[in-house]
View (tube, one colour):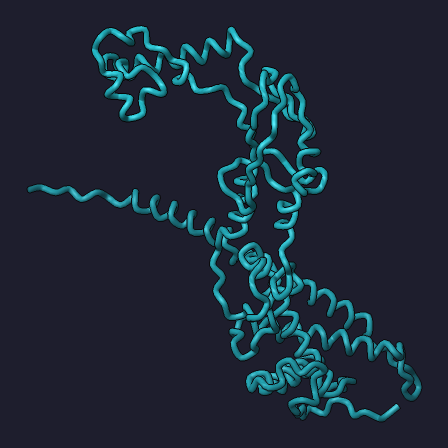
Length: 382
């Protein structure tokens, strides 16, 4: 094994050959701070009073990892906050320096599915079809009809059946027709005569016609076998039993089309948290609060590395005695510090979430109102 010199108090950063990944090597601020952080960590570990059995590259490696961990925590929080807004967007543009507005795009996409089922919108087509009714036949297999139309068995889902009785207006006969007013011919010119004797349109108020229509329809519902139907497993049963051959209109959708829109092509799109386009942070843009956290986390990583190095030999012989190294203390301290720093950072980020900020603003408004309520009202004397 090569005899690698340990830290000598004079770290030198060489871009492109020091850190394992080189994420930030081209950043001038990172280059400058790397040297300063190496000296900071070494001094905190007792150098130059005691030797630190690491080389300069170990400090730079820990510094790179600390910056990356900070960025991971920061952007994991941002991703959690904004995922619903960015899902389905392009992965081609990094989101690090973007302001992401809170949109309703995913909620609208979900509501479209309700629109499909309610028949008031949605993003799949409704189709019209005609079922041939046969006199004295009450039951019809719509799956068999769909196969005849070229669809797969079970692919259609019926949405509407237009099996309705003729409107009451076509069966409404005015008892006052033929009283000699001779207005029937006049209204026939406008096409009204096909529905009802035209005299009633002129001699009676419209409310009278509405009451008549309602009476006819109630009569059909209560005293007659009214037009109705039921569908179970795409088996249609209609009431009353058809008395002649006719055509029955239906509206339906294709289940295959509804299933197809459930899966959107993910090529080049954000489909999960792993391909959301967040890159490593730009070190020079991290403020002093973030850098302070990074310095402390770097020190914890350096302690951990030094602990493992010293753990190779639990004791070191010296003339007349032996020295026990502090491996366990270093590793325990490093683990505790790392856990504390991560917890602190996550709590800090959580306090800046939309929910927490809105809650804080609401409380501030309430306190301000309470404060203003204590201000004496001005008495104006005119």
